[in-house]
Length: 304
Length: 271
Ligand SMILES: Cc1cc2nc3c(=O)[nH]c(=O)nc-3n(C[C@H](O)[C@H](O)[C@H](O)COP(=O)(O)OP(=O)(O)OC[C@H]3O[C@@H](n4cnc5c(N)ncnc54)[C@H](O)[C@@H]3O)c2cc1C
Ligand SMILES: Cc1cc2nc3c(=O)[nH]c(=O)nc-3n(C[C@H](O)[C@H](O)[C@H](O)COP(=O)(O)O)c2cc1C
Ligand code: FES
Image (tube, rainbow over all chains, first blue to last red; front, side, top):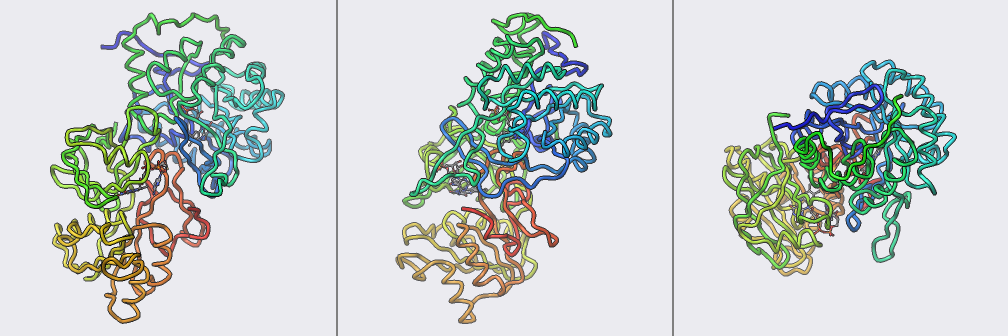
């Protein structure tokens, strides 16, 4: 029995519930049609798309760590043209709600990407990936600079005036709340925290770096406390909603994120080993009723 | 939701048998609703209720009948140890069947299947499937292991028309690896022509293709790589291949696991 309507909104965009699949692990969404009921999920945040297709990084791309996963995918994606013509329509046809993740590369790639998103007409919510650690230009060098975060967010608001703009932040910085404030200043409707944490591993008898790029992005349960800390502090530093991402592996983790002040949660790495988790979180939210999760503090929220 | 479901299944282990010092046969009850599968398809199993190890472990389907699902599990690390320690009645969270392109059926009357170690699993499924479909095809298995007691002889005898063994230590069959055995058979005119199927370590498949690929009308191989999603979403399991004159990265889990060996850009594909 559905005790409550878990619907909520970010800026102008409405969602049936606050449980999302995270960009990257979720792919283009439809890969999971036979494992996850996509129509029950709040939104699929699609794999970060860049203006041009990207082949991604050569060499090994995945490595398991203690309760974590290192990845060096390098933003492999089909590029804006195929994404908006094929991948996004397929996902919408499957009955899913999409949040489109746009890659913030250099300005010359970013502007035409925003134009392509605007031209697609079906985009009403985007997450700006200001924080991928696995590519050279753009990505994190942009995401670590508050002035650039503000500028990239503002450009997205201008190019997509009807859409919800969510800025995804990197934890690989001294104080993530500074980045969150910059995103809010640029007009973001929400921020997502966090992307992967930089890390590395060595292997073989010679203890050589696992990845060609040496550093990679750590995800999974190992980073949950880092993400919880970021969400807690950002929720107290800005008055736009926070979307929590990082290490969620149980319904209890989701409850902790909500209690820390998150408005929504994203399930990433856990999809790989527990594809039923997103639906179980939705079940728990619906069963809990209008009271919301225990410990959740009502937060003041400025309407934008 | 799609009409077909690929899990997660709660698969019950029916029996487990140590076939050799390092290999176990695990026979699961086929979960209700588990779709049909083709040789080269696989399942991915959560080996622990905790988050260590974190990822599922992929295993080729060695056989699928109306009531059972068989896997061959070699001792490697923590995940395979947990599977090998399991007992009849234990349940595992499993997804599958996964995989895009399976082994195609042979175009002609001869098929040669070359297996290294547990690479035997999908080839055994292939031979059994063709037999069940009453394909008029003669199968020759060329199968290698490190030592004689690692050869799973009983499994292969019933499934293949002809079989030849190779062991590194010379304990049984040909003294050397399967590639040397294949080279030897080709040079002595004892190797049937037709379609070649292989599965085994990367180095083996690459050397096999270089040594004997041109003897066959086609060489199909099932590849392995560390996997996270198993469904083509995460792009973690890519292999560089030549496709239509271009270099492209394919996901082994969803674009394979079977590829034409001649298309693989081995130099670029790291171990
Ligand atoms: C499509 C596919 C089919 C397979 N079929 C079989 C089979 O039929 N029988 C069999 O014994 N093994 C098979 N393997 C290999 C098997 O998945 C690995 O041996 C197993 O994952 C090792 O896990 P572990 O925890 O015991 O070892 P660990 O050393 O602890 O594993 C460490 C990490 O490496 C990964 N890993 C290690 N070796 C491999 C490998 N060769 N391929 C993929 N991932 C690996 C693990 O998933 C894990 O992420 C298959 C692999 C793939 C991709
Ligand atoms: C294989 C993989 C690929 C990822 N790709 C992207 C990406 O393209 N864009 C992005 O914003 N985040 C990407 N991420 C980060 C996730 O969206 C998520 O923020 C991060 O993994 C932390 O959450 P988790 O621990 O739940 O996975 C990726 C993560 C993984 C594991
Ligand atoms: S394992 Fe994710 S794409 Fe193959």
